[in-house]
Image (cartoon, rainbow, N blue to C red):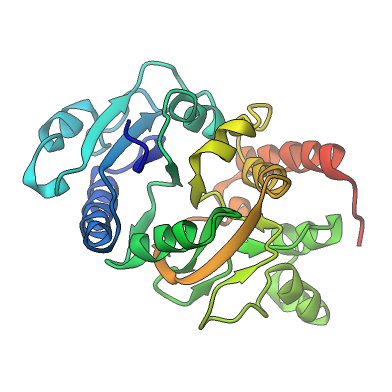
Length: 279
C-alpha cells in the first residue's frame, strides 16, 4: 500500500448481508468525502469472515465478489478472508494488521454506520496531531448516545453494568457516569482517554503494528481495553465528537450464558494483566 493509505478490517460472524451492505455504503461515502480534503490515496477494505457459511441471509464471498470494483464502493477496494474458522475477534483483525503497511487502520464491527463527514474528521485529527495514535468517535444507537470511551474499570463497575438490574444502580449513578466518561465535551476533541471501544478504532498504522495488534489470548471481550492501554503507552488516545457513527451492538449479558462466560473469562485475564481494581 502507499504511505497515505487506509486499511479497514471488519470482523463478521454470521452477519446479515443487509448490515454489511449498510456499513459499506456509509463507509464508501465517508471515504469519498475524506478524499476531498485529504490526500487519501488508497482504501482497502477487508471483510474477515469468522463464521464460515451459515444462513442464506449472511454476507458471503459471492456478495463480496459482486461488490468488488462496483461504483457502489466509490473507488474503495474490497476483499474477503475466510476459511480460518472462528479464531476470535482480535485474532481476525490481526490477520489484516500483520500484512498491511497502511499509514492508518480502521478497526470495525459490522454493526457500525458512518456519517458522511465522519472519516474526514477522524483522519484530519490524526494528520494534525501526530502524537495521537487512536481516535474514538461519538456514537449513538438510534435511541440515544453511546459512550465508547472508558476509564479503567473496577470489578464493582463491571458487576453493576453486567448483572445488576437498572433500578438497583441508582446509588452508583455518578460512579458509572465517571467510568463512561460522560463528562467529555461534545463540541471539541478530548485527549487523555484511557480506553476506547473496539467497535470503531481509527488507529495510526505504525504504532498499531508496533503494539502487535490485539492480544489473541482474548477470544472476545476486553481485547479492545487491553489494546487501548498498550497503545496509550505509545501515544495519545483522543475522542473526536465530529467523527460520528451509529452503533447497534453491545450488551454482552443479553446475548446468553455463553457470552456471559466469555465476558467473565476475558475480564479476569484483563485484570490479571493490568491490575485488579475492586471498587
